[in-house]
Image 1 (tube, rainbow, N blue to C red):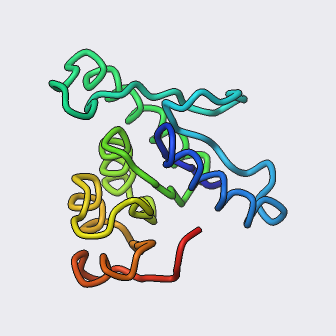
Image 2 (tube, helix red, strand yellow; image 1 turned 180 degrees about the horizontal axis):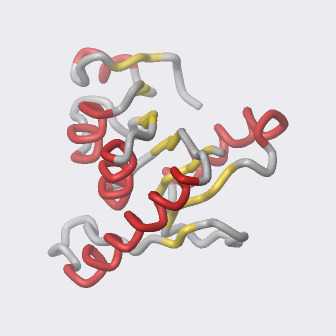
Length: 151
């Protein structure tokens, strides 16, 4: 079982590109943790945006997202070992909780970053087993990251 944690827009597009690449091998073994407008199925987890761009932190959504710690522990007990995160900020809490529970985390920095790391990358790249950057220039900025091109 693999958890895909991602946000709306480009993050969702990137997650779906990777899903297409691995779908045959992992079909039926992918859970979505997102605030994107998708057709949720059994086991998927709906997140709420707590860190909107250019706005104040939404405290209620931030606190709401803490309930996912309970959901993640249930998934660890069921044998889920891997979370793949694509950002944005709403993926920080799940990523840190997943890491704290002993789960493996892979992080993809968004393809729209060229010169600076995102807030999410600054945190998750420190705890992720592997951090992929999708632009060569970021490999020099985010330590221990791997550049393999864009999804």
